[in-house]
Structure formats: structure tokens, C-alpha cells
Image (cartoon, rainbow, N blue to C red):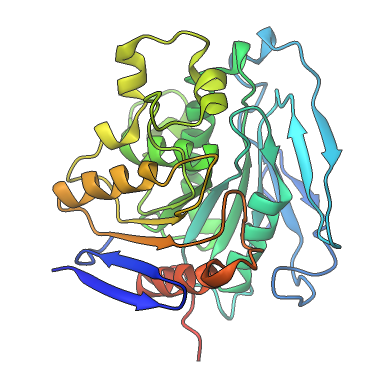
Length: 338
């Protein structure tokens, strides 16, 4: 069954049937959150920052660039453009226990696989989630091309999901309620993690490998989905795959080609006037999800462009966080509004 609904400014919403999807840990660091969280209320709990890889991330020894954070704050909203990550981390925002739902979402900022819009598409989003009852996790993953090409970003995304599951009991997270959310190139990484997961290996020497890296749901916001030249974002493709990737590699890293009936329920958000990442990316992903009977919903907005995060004021695109909240609430990820 499909549901077609129209809202202001030609919002199209397509849906398929829904299916069911302490003490700081060792090595963690308490991080004081901004004075106000996504709702404007004072944060009640410190954030935790943990390394994704104890003892150093694999392949990072070949990385020569130093990490740098450029201040791109605008209109009183903090935003850092982070490049040169060699030691990936995740920052965990936990909800008030009174409103906790037991779900967690790993958030992957975008940046064309060249850098990360760390606050706009990361910390702000994670705090928004925590304010609504979910554990919000910002993943500061490695990217930037050269030694940080595929599969380095994917290994960090998988690692983050496993790390959340390894702390499920102490953070009050259900192991079967760990999702992934990504923006732009981070959307491509989220889609790749959702279609190319790695199962749990109970006998693995690394304890984290004993947890699955498959997410239980995915949210893709103006995502790069395909690596095909005609529809992809050129910078993301080059930074992830190099100057002249093979046709086989481009096909394998086009998420629409990797969808199966086991792909988790997925929400897609895109603006029709996006000139950086054509909406064809989301349309292809939605079509593939539909073909395989995966619960999916697509919100295609008339105006909004690219990179609006959760701060858009362009037409009905400003309403997309409400659509996200409703979709997450229907799955028990965030607490329903009274």
C-alpha cells in the first residue's frame, strides 16, 4: 500500500507499509555541551566523547594532514568545518532518563567526503534527538581522499554502530534500536552502512566485532546515493573513490544497487531544486527500496536547495524536522509529543 499526501508548497510524501525494525566508559572524555541544546533548554547531562579505535585508527598512520576546525558559524549558530581527521571519535548525547526511549541514532555529517559540517549536521542534530528521548551520537569520521578513501569512512561508520551496541546496557539502549542518519555525503555513508553491513562475529578477537554493524533504520537527508557520473556529486565521488574509479567500484558504491529485502526501514529527505546533489539520488534509492519491499518514505520538497540542515526557512522545507519526528516516533525512536 502506498500513501500520497500533499502539504504546503508541493511537499510529496510517499510511504510503504511500516515494519518493525553510569559511569563514563574507559577511554571516554566528558565534553561540556553548548549552553543550549536543540530545543533551547539547558543540557542536563554532559556529552561523552570516545575514540572509535583504541590504540589508533587503522590506516591513519599513512595520513599526513593535521586535523583543523574552521569556524563557519552563522546567525548565532555554531558551525565548524572539520578536515584532516585521523583519530575518529563519537560524541554521545544521552537523554533525560524520564523521557528515554531506548533507541540510539548515529549521525554522520556531510561535507563531500572532503570535510565535516560538524555542528550543523552533527552536534545540533544529536542534541535534537536527545531532547526527544533518543541517544544522539555524532560520528567524526575520517575522509578527505588520498589515504582516507573507501573503505576508511565505512569502517568508521560500522565501528560507531558496534561501539553503541557494546555500551547498550550502560546507556540504556536496546541493541535492536540503533539507527543511522546522514546528510549529503554523510547520507551516502549512511546508505552504504545500511546496505553493506557486517554481521556479528561471536568468536572475534576484537570484542566490538562480536556486535553487528547493521543499523535498524536509516535517515538519509539530501543524500548522495549513486556514484554514477550522471547523477552523483563529483567531489564526493572523487574524494571517496579517486580520480578514475573503475565501473565496478562505482557500481558497488552506488547504494541503490545494494538494496535487498533486508535493508532497514528508510526515510529520505530531498529538495527538488538541489543543484549540488540531484534529487535523482533519492528517487533511485526510494525506487530500489520499493522494489524490494522495504518500508520507506520519501519527502520531496519543491524548494530548499542543498545543505539546509535542520535550519531551513525555504518554503515547506522548514517543516521537514516535523516529518522526521513523526517518522521516528512511529518507530519508538523518539517520544511522541503530547
